Image (tube, rainbow, N blue to C red; front, side):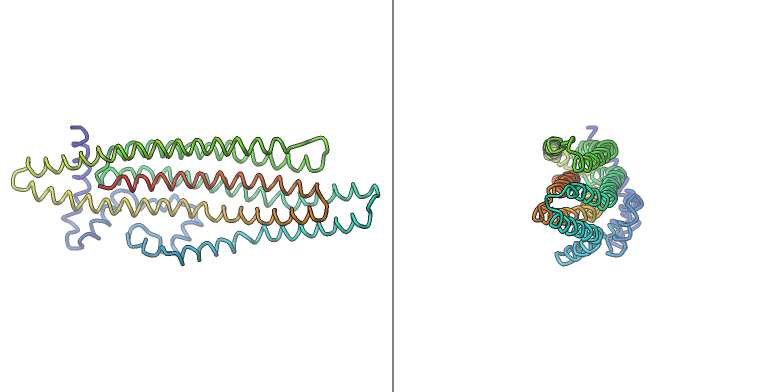
Length: 374
């Protein structure tokens, strides 16, 4: 009975705009519900770069037709633009590293068998580290910043989305999913602040030290960190999405029963106007369902827009590091190759963390939108 009263209160609140917007039809109801739910404030919590990107491309959930602008051509055009922006710094650093490798190779050929060769190799490793350290750490910091920005956005998005899901006729699904999503958001924020950045910075420093010192061997540490991180993140993500999927599937049936019971009570218990009120409930829940889908997709697009430029930049770094590492091996410079491989391992781990985080948010919102339909 409490569930029925709960949903009746929600439907009554969101049914208020029906009379005021009768002349504008469904679009007027949608816009009023969009404003009442607080969804019009979601853009305020996005990073400035994402706000500008959304404004330029007409991504605005106040008009549900914005999703019609999403097409394969547009998506690939945006990815191409991200590639152009993300490749600049890696290419510059890659050119510098190739120059160091070629010079060191020439010196090695001229000084083969001489004691000066060892000093030249270590100097080249330090030069490579100097070229890499600042831009790589900047990319790592920007990636951590993207995770924090996505967490901040989700922290304001989830309560608004939960209200919309509840008002669309799924209060039980809303309560269970919002709690899990908020927990995931806080976990991402904490993990990015106190684990990822210190871990990556420490690993980068250890990799540089081990490349110029024969006393430090970081290969075992690198593989250990990578395996543990990937295993833990994969296990946590699988458990989280699994719990959310099971809860949402079961609660969806309970929500469906609650909505049908509420409509039955309105249709039979209220004299004369009961049928009209029941139809009004159908109209409002249908409009809220549209709002839920529009805002839910907006949330997934926002998360992708925050992460995707940094992920592409990191992938460009990986490509540059793989190519320069292959050239250093070809020139028989194992010290430089070892440093480049170590940095590549660090970046591959960071890419995996970001992809898993993005996947958790997108899959979670998709599950709620899909199973929450009435």
